Length: 507
Image 1 (spheres, helix red, strand yellow):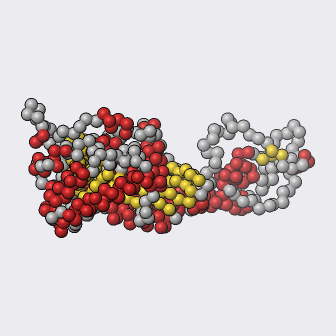
Image 2: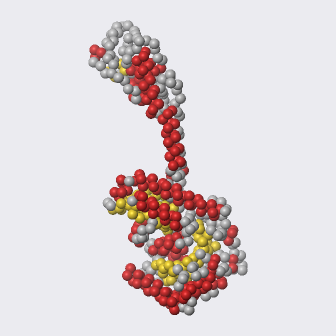
Image 3: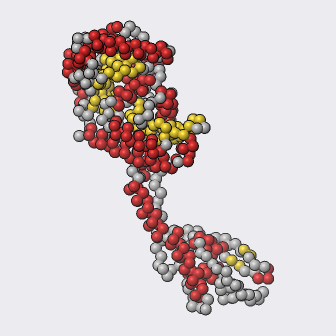
């Protein structure tokens, strides 16, 4: 299941418009997924790609499947292209414009309205299920015309509609067409010029992932930042123990960059399916609002002579809080401990040395309780009283000594010193880690164990780019913190590249 990806806009040039209906100017057409700000519809930063081929070769279908998420079974209902269609692709790394041309353009290139030097790349589509002679003849004519204006032109030959061929016959047909084209170039009178044109052959089908891989390689040759992205991928892979990594454009399911290791078709299909599966659930969470940042705790500002704040400060008053009497001595030496005082000691972490307790005189059965003889002077209640109001009795020094310990302990754990240190550490971490603010902590991630020895990990890098890696399960479990740390810096580097690209388009 694929999520609809309306990726570009389709326009028609003015020279192909009918007389009754004037064509829409190119500058007046808005791109739906363009970056913020008023961007020009056409500019030097947009790479032009000429899509050529004979009639019913599959030029329109491959654009609709890759960039508009058209189901492959619906490509049979597409109308034949009779006029030039311009499809703008505004990805986060490179901006493209595909010119979907009808078959009659191959006979007369002047009908394009622009010279061939206007394009940075040409993609020629050959239907593998049709006769090869006619498209190869048109291809040689196109190469001869291109060689006169630019001998180093970027040519891509797409051997399309290979879904009905077996794997062995598919490879055999691919090699036959490739050798046939090279032989025709050698027999051409202008073979000295044609031999300098770099030719890139790809085999594709709308029913499998070969089309996405072929389009990915075509786009990578037009990406100025491809070398930088590949170096970043190589550094991430080598320092994180990753077997293979892809930087996917989620909207088109094409990979912008990968590491230097060879691309395996099965690995690419696995990563592509995983990205497609995660993208199908994005609409379920698009209305979720991010959680508000946690409120910073108010630092405690108490003077050195005052008592340390108690953990019961946020509780109701003593008259509304039940008290519990706990007996810690034999019945003959009954000692009452207030639960409020004990909770204060536990909260502040105060340490009390063992002090011998003198025998307290018994209170008369009918007489009032004496506050000076109700409990020993070194009891926990005396400690609480000493914190609130130090006395000058003979036992006052011990009480004050006991009261200072919770204060110093509180400062080292949760007082102003601790709050200031944690805030400073948080600010320092935000400066060290790229994108350490609250907004950057919303990037999604996912992982799944494919086999007991292999895992697949996913990290969102930008709004439209995601990193997908194949890694050993043992390495991922033991060093996941280090891998996440490296991905954080990788994300920051890619986001800076995207910001520079957006700034260039806004100029």
